[in-house]
Length: 404
Image 1 (cartoon, rainbow, N blue to C red):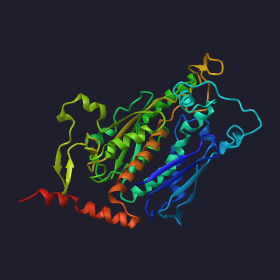
Image 2: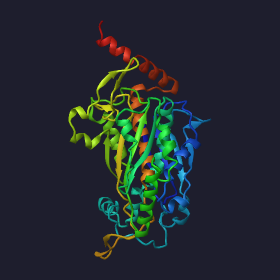
Image 3: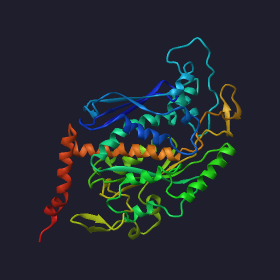
Image 4: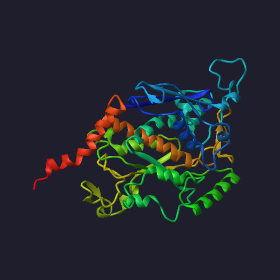
């Protein structure tokens, strides 16, 4: 229904996003997109690149006078660092000799990339596999985020742990137990987590994490962690079980696993559900305020590939950044001899940024499935379709099943 294409290299001239499939008359501004780009760049433990770049989007097409036209939207994010890489990343052949990168880094796409694409320079693998590409994703997915907000659907995130340091009380447990007021928006989670330099909700935990990041820097090492993405305001009925690739949890897992360095995704209780009795896992159905609800939300807001109307709860794990200032062992491909891996400017920790990127990818998935169900050519048409469904879905269930 909607499509996102990103293009560009980490040290190329710019990153490009092309977004198609959104209806006309959605209000959107560059400032809104830039706010999400700014959130992606924040976080204690980021590298020198974040001091060079201040990501701002330039909208090229598809928006007029602050509203979408229904046509493809194209956006650019210029790389300031391009000035230092003009010769190395030149599109056209140059007379000057450019040194080739010949030492792959463990944990990166360096070695597998040159093997798959038959490159003679690891630089070709480095540039496109870099997480710099996610800036283009965040820009494109901001259209989806703004679209969903028009229907009261919001996406938030917070960091659960970095380097194995967890909070005393896990905020996500309240969502799993369905002890969060229905009026509580994921936007509020972002307001709280964005106040922290590592996007955690526990001040004592933040201090411990910062100390560990300082230790990692001193050792020339890196850290990973875990984070939660919470989606609130989603109605019953998004996603499907009729085709394997339309299941909501499958689409969300794919999108978040596509983020560089993410190694695991859970929905709801996730792996914990494998250790418990069924009575401790499944969410009992109740009638509440003339509609259906659940006593708990251990399923994470999804049953049978379809949203239940409760908050979507996603937990993900990010591995430590693979570039180490105290390098691991590798091989110099030009000499076929063992050597320390090369260093490439990088972050020490990027879990806070990864959580923001995951918000964006989740927004994209939900917007796509939402438009498949409530599609229209204009925002007004989509809103009419959505309003009709939300007002009448419980009535339809009663009509089909209930008899006095």
